[in-house]
Length: 302
Length: 252
Image (cartoon, rainbow over all chains, first blue to last red; front, top):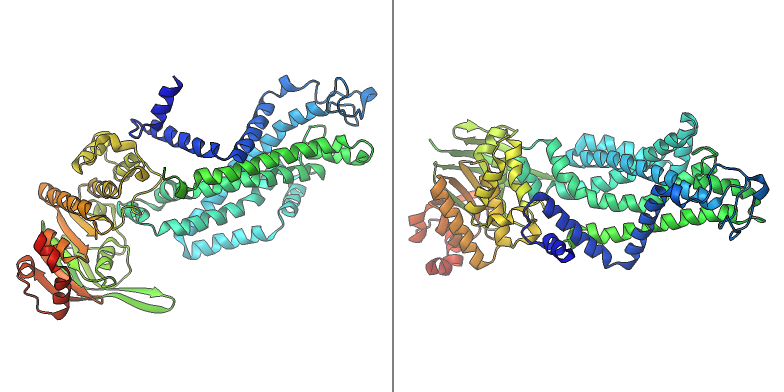
């Protein structure tokens, strides 16, 4: 069965669009598998996904249930293996439910910012001239602000909350994608295959969406995975400053912030969510590095 | 009336404040179903003429008429259905992330022609590729196979005129001959008009009824196939070019 599946995937003469695409994914997976660090990264990201999906099963407590009699217990206490925070809430449970919030933020930013950046970058690069000048100067203005400061300003205007935090992060995260996409577009737009499709009478919209964007996508996807660590950190930073997710939601940055007061006596309250952020950021970074090998069009010759 | 008429064509590129005149005052006319060659060394402006016809090069003077109608600054879909081009490098002219199916069905989608499946399969068989190749990616093909795909793509819209920009110079010798024979066969079957660029007189001799020798962006001399075979050149430049490739022409 498995063997049949493999030969079907590796068939040099696929019988349908779907088989051709799945075959390419399979080859990509084989390339990714050759890089052990990337597999570690992928495992971490998949573990985060599983954790978020199975949160009610994995959690040992209610993430909001307070028990002031059992506050600030150290890790490895029976019943609370990662300890409890200052309200006696189980830290493991809150980490597990916090994975949902982290993933929610990451997913929303990963959908919005790269799409905006891709559109701005490819349009600027493809048309050139005045369009390029205007779009890239706008991009420059956004790039000139420090990201966290701009996000802070936006959140303080829009009001704190998870959606506004996502919006603020997305609005500050798109300019690098626009730059990457524009650079890639400039190398592609003079290519013969673009000239060929233009010669067939294709309009600019079709050329950009169907022919330019597929060439920009790999570098943008790599950039997105590498940026995810930064997004998690900014979300955590906003949470830490009280401008992102609001208590009592178990957001990791917020948890660090509330543990700050007891950092010297009860170190685990701040350290454990910090470790969670560290591990997930590392996972995305390793995965991004591995995807670079998989998606680089120059290495897809086999 | 000639199908392609070019009068006094000039193409000027602006590069870093300088004007580079790639083509200056070239005139030629190609009759329907004729095969016309442009020959010259690198930089003589022969490819630029093809690109100017397609709107890919900045025309600074002169007129281009296709079937009597002057082409403007913007190429319409109707133009695309009459004139198509095969590029020099088959490794650069096919989208690396599209399957052959996508590459070949794209022109049909642009022109809203139906019956995609049958047309794509027919296009593949017409250029001598097995239909099983339909969902392959270009990196799974050899250079010669890719050039066949590029030819099939150019023929998808059933044009009258095929512009060939050194279609075989990126291929090795045995594949060159196959590709040229394929082009000749398709021209006969479909009554195509060829405007073909090459730096190789042997290729031109095999393919073309008439040939224009170009040098430094100017037309040097026009020769018929008979004049070429009989080595009856008037200009020294054409003779030099002829001598450079004469031995290979005799073999063929």
